[in-house]
Length: 474
Image (cartoon, rainbow, N blue to C red; front, side):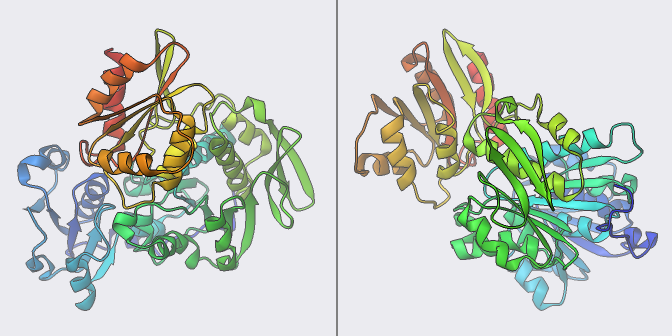
């Protein structure tokens, strides 16, 4: 990786510490907000953190910052926050069109987030990965490939962003010859005015319409990962997804693609005779037999193809790609096997926070299915989900705020219906116990909600962990 042409060097080392005496407002005290607060406070800024939640609900977050001089405002974002402010930073869950953010722009106060700050300063090559589904799996898998590439070298791979830990805290340790693999959400991208030099868009399908309101606005947010690239940069797009493939018109530099068949032109990954192939220039290289991929489902096979295409873009060797694929069984809360009870296999796909992701999860199994779906609706269409559920699910258990809405769509959906039992529960724990009663040996119980977790949990991870605990306790 030495001498990589995508390396961007900071203007100066002082640039990383330019916050001395500046007044910085951070909105939202979740994971990204904590990282932003620590970064600015350590840089000498006067930091004010504001969150809509009451003080007592954020004791753990405040404890994490107890070693730093931080001012807190709880229960709202009053306009007075902007007095003397030099910068306004938004955590991922804070909308870019928040009234305070709009007011800041009118006053000429820069509005930014952790991802923008990181890209502005990071000295290493950054791979940015986004998509409506699969971005955490691909980020993790590319990270495994990079770690294999850098084994026994002085370079390092850094994996983070929207997945795991924000990367701001790692900046002092990241070198110019390192590689950063960074997951980026639409919430982060909608604010950004910089693109990573290597950018992957896996797919663009309906998601987060409760936040973005229209598919056009959501697509615009996703496509910002490409909007600020140069002719020297690289874009990786999925050929099988119309939303991602339509963005090829935005590509300013080199295009690498991934899909089932060989690309009609240009470089990319594909499958031929059961082998994952990589085409770069005039060379077609065999990577791995499909049978050695341990992830379930066609959507995960596409994730592997995407990972290899991205790895090829930064000259990771075929051997390192194969090493990353081997033994990779996915990450928690993503078609995660929990346990077998009396011949019934229980799976956790809590990350399925849209109907489309639940559809992909269902299609990953051939066994009879007991489906646990629900949570909070994101104003997404449930029609295709209902059609597949009626055709494929043996026992359907709905829970949470969206349960009645989903039930109505399924009941009124046309076509055949093979559902043997159909129940509605108040919460996930009750759904788990009901699934235990209806499941038989040979069945799969699948948590793939289709909605967010915010009606009952803080996030999908907390929901998945609760599900695992309840299943382990059966």
